Every structure is written in structure tokens, then in C-alpha cells.
Length: 294
Image (tube, rainbow, N blue to C red; front, side, top):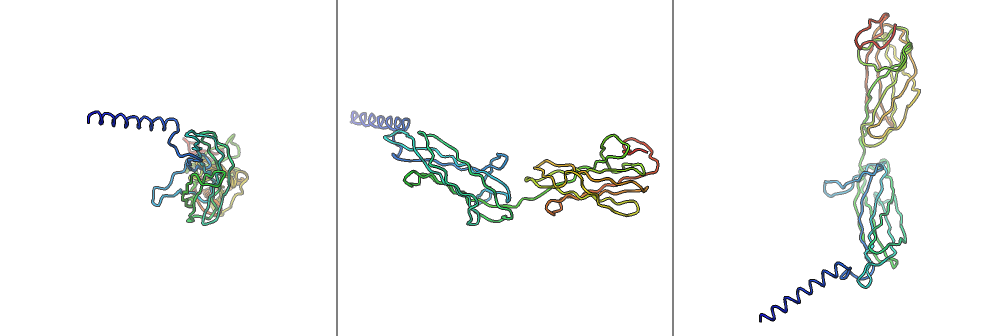
């Protein structure tokens, strides 16, 4: 009895050793064409996009933005217990509301034994598509049309909240050598030609073109809208901005002037900022309050 138990233990050990050797050298893997597949998405800056944490989980993609789907394909084809080269075909489809917005079949592609290649497909989410749902579909197919691997990931088109702000007023005043920043309480001398420039910044996650309207209200309540002469409707990416320069006006009246800048994109108002400054016949120069010259 003891000898039988010893023999059984020896046989079990041998079987285990064979299994380990098979795994190490490819034995035991299913014969024929096989493949592995992974799928990921990045935005235009190469940042990875993660699925939403809200169930059912889907990739939330912003309408009007460009993305790239990356499909990693590993050739796991085996012949006589060894990994071998193979030729594979990889179709990829991006679909939204049952309409394909990107669709390409890659291949035939030659793979070495156990080799991984990444196939990229660029696509743009349609504008005004917020609320629509769809999917990204990827397959690995052998030359005979047999499906070896597959993945389907749900996607949602979400709206982008546009946000931007006016950051500063700059002035170039007749008789001064350079642009200076205007602040509330600044003084300017009478009868000076003044150019204003308005800075703005993009505070959202997508680029947009900024349009700045600049209104001047004079001490007698008359108003004028100054024409932009540079950088109007320029596009800024996230955390970027522009300074829009405007034509000149003359400080022909003594009293309080008001500058009112309105930032818009595509007709959508994003921010309004206003500032008063004082024009006097003779300026009393003081600490940090005078930006003009007599």
C-alpha cells in the first residue's frame, strides 16, 4: 500500500512537471490561429480617456472633438505546440446612433510569433450630437474569415461646457512709450488718444474662437463700440488666450469713462467685465494711480 501511494505521488509530480513545461514552451495552447485584443481611446493631446464610473459604464466623448482608438492585437497562433507567424485582418468601426462615423478594415497584416501590434483609427465626434449613444467595435479575423478575438465598447456623446473670462485691460496712451495695465481708479490726461487691448483666457476643456466686443461710455453718457484691429476671433486651447487690440478713442471729456468688454464664442456670451477710469484736465501723480501723461 505504501509503495502504491509512493508511485501515485510520483506520477502526479510528473504530470505537474509536464504541464509546467508545456506552459513554458507553448504546449497546451490551442492549435491553430489565435489572437488577443485590447482597446483604448486617447484625445488629441494623447491623454487616455477612461470609461465613466456611472453604470452602465461607457466612454464619454465630447461632441465636435477628435479622438483616436488604439486596438492592440497579439498574434497567439500555435502550430505543433509553438507560436508561429500569422496574417490577420482587423476591422474597426466607430458608430453613433446607428451611423458609422469611422470605419476601416486594416490588413492583411503580417505578425511574427507572439507579436503585438497597435492599430490606430482617428475619428471626430459629430457636432450637436450630445445625448446620442453608440459603440466602438473591433475584431481580429484570420485569412479564412474566422473571428479570433473581439471587443465592443459603448460610447456616449456629451456636450462641452464652454467657459472663458476677460483677464485684463491694457492701454497705449499718447505720449507714453509702452502699453500699461489699467486698473480701477486709473487716471488719464484729457485730450489723449488711447488704444485699448483686452486679454481673455479659455477656461474650458476644448478650443474655441474668442470674440471680444469693447464698449466705451463717455462722461456725458455717449457710447461707442471700438473696432478690433488684431487677434479678433482667434482660437485658443484650454488655459490659453489672446489679447485683442482695438482702435483708438480720444479722452476729450473730463470725468468718468467706462470700459465694458464682452467675450463671446459662436454668439454665446461667456463673460462680461467692466472698469471705470478718470480723465482729469491736470493729473495729480501718485503711487500707482496714474497711467497717463499731462
